[in-house]
Length: 368
Ligand SMILES: *Cc1c(COP(=O)(O)O)cnc(C)c1O
Image (cartoon, rainbow, N blue to C red):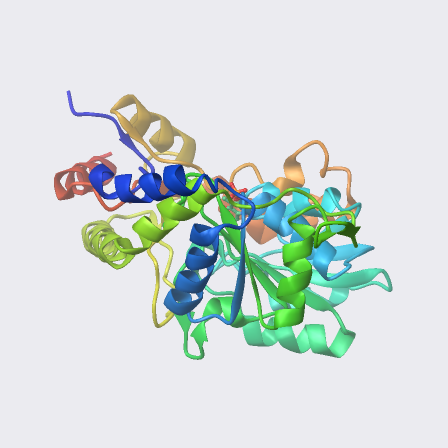
């Protein structure tokens, strides 16, 4: 019996290389409150990603909530139902009404052509997601935002290191939010960051993630505790040394899947969006009607054989109880998202995944 294969497995650098960081923390007794590792990691990530300003957070969900507050977003925000539930939850935590718009059937990202008809006088922003790390149609989205005076906040939880023709995809829109959760390409166990283009916004975000404190005795906003600890920041600094290697392993696995699944009837690999630099964070396939099994039967059979893929994203956010009553959650409004949620399967991909396992998975899928 083979060892179970999960959809992802966190990439961990050698443990002995972490001890010197721990020693520094123990010696200085600085555990949090934006200490030296916090500052070092912010700078190192700005350099690595090619972005101007970055504020570290305890996780991406708190970072999304804070990003919306930093820009004083209210009313309605246009977003996608095809994402992890934290995208829409960050709106509810701010008392904002999510308005779901359908996705493009090829990229599964928010379809810019459908945004305009969802805009009302209450709309203040658009919150798209770079699903699987494939960049959204950022130019079309910005054009609409400019025409209607809307802010754009990208949930870029999947988009660590992704670049388009202009450089980092994180430089688009007003703010972008990364996740460093254990399941993501780059992890600090738990963590996240807000990327912003100007220093003034970065300072406001830094205040908001620290209770709104400015100096010892002033509190200027109803902030939250969103600070990343020194322990997590140290993990990030060490992880960063290995990230290029980790992504190049993912790239080989991505290529192997594409090659081996090419001829399999009824299985479509999602096209990568042609970005200049991808991160191979997920390997999504669509199980079409002409495949011998339904998506759920394939999912179950793979699980029974010790392979654990995930149905990202199923169910849609718009089908959860706190969202399904919204008029925009109506399935007729979201045909492409609903179709994708029924067909999608994300296959295992992570740096340590063995090629034998990839071959076994592909053989299993091809021989049903
Ligand atoms: C993982 C994820 C989040 C939440 O990130 P956390 O760091 O776990 O809070 C938000 N949005 C998307 C699209 C995600 O995949």
